[in-house]
Image 1: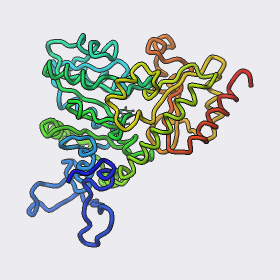
Image 2: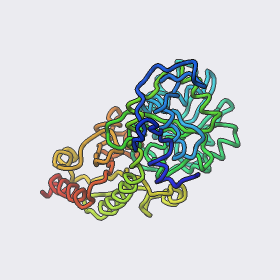
Image 3: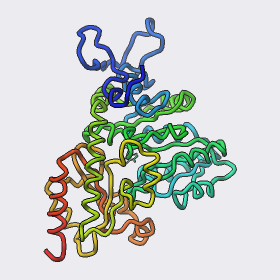
Image 4: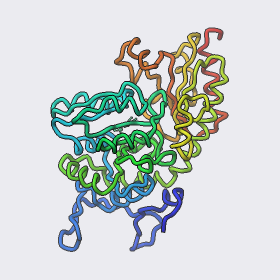
Length: 384
Ligand SMILES: Cc1ncc(COP(=O)(O)O)c(C=O)c1O
């Protein structure tokens, strides 16, 4: 029976409690299992214990893949997916404004193994095509991008890659499976920092890769040697969290749209970056490939009359936090965090001004969130 996504969030993959008939999946903490009465050797680092398997089934159904492997962090999932599909001499293309951790990983690790990489100059399909070389084997993207929420056309990139016999990986962390299923557009592998929306409560570190059996087998072959599997308790907790994924993300979509429209009208705000706004340059692509909503992430620029440090200090409800995707609203100022190592000129070249604020919108009452933003903007303005 194929259920709708909301039902799958609650029930897909769940383990039956055959002993007590409890309502939720039992937690199996064992790291040691009998070898003579089972089809395969169960062991945490083999990614096949009961809670890992239950969670993998749920996530692969939500992401429309055949199978999922669950890791201890997003970076463990990302590094395993990349390393298992690359070898010395191969070349892979990344988009230019990549999540800092992934960018740092490839710049630090790939040269040691003789793996070549390049960054696209823009996010259009032709920008990726221009980077293709004879030894290119894959294309890795994130959409919506961070922190300006630009959109990459999944269908076009997947077609380009297939025509050139390359694989594709999409980091779907920001959209979550509620809003976007890259595999439905022909993308080969989807990765997540499940530390964000899938976990949703800022208390679980986890990562996910979803794909078809061919790629999962390749990644598994690598991962069982490198480790990086999720713990049993985190698996169980993440399965519990995903039961409310749809409810949470739908509320976050609504709140983000509401705040984006509100900020657009604010005289101290010079621009708002949210793919759900019709004024967003990639709105039509987003509308076409994001089905549930446009996500809970947005960024905005305040004009020069606003003192960003004062704005930050004045917030009462929205917390400054480097992470995202939780039920609580948080924000970062890229100048102080993800892009602090760049010079002002380098930041401006990437379109990141000193007054850019990235907001991860939670599930609170939108009126309270607006009030918090408005009060802090007023306090931080030169006119106050
Ligand atoms: C888009 C994206 N991908 C991957 C990661 C890495 O995930 P983790 O911190 O769980 O390793 C992050 C973390 O912030 C992220 O924002």
